[in-house]
Image (cartoon, rainbow, N blue to C red; front, top):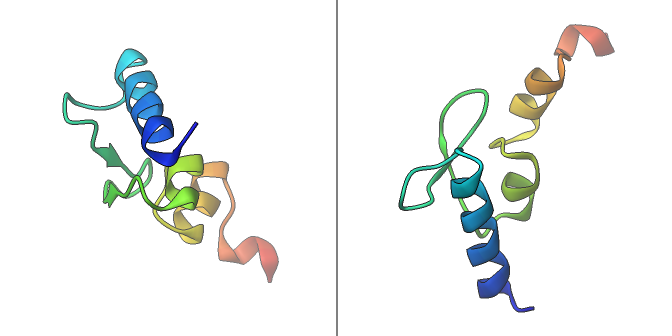
Length: 65
């Protein structure tokens, strides 16, 4: 399966599960920024960066100090 087909399959799954609108735009679960289908990290975790991922799983920088 090539990259275009994988993106199309992901968009269909997201729409079927009520996550995105008709255009298939992704938004970060924590801050609401739009995400790219080209970035594997953003597609996999549905967050824009590591800080938002930490917040989504309940961590903060204080936990590491």
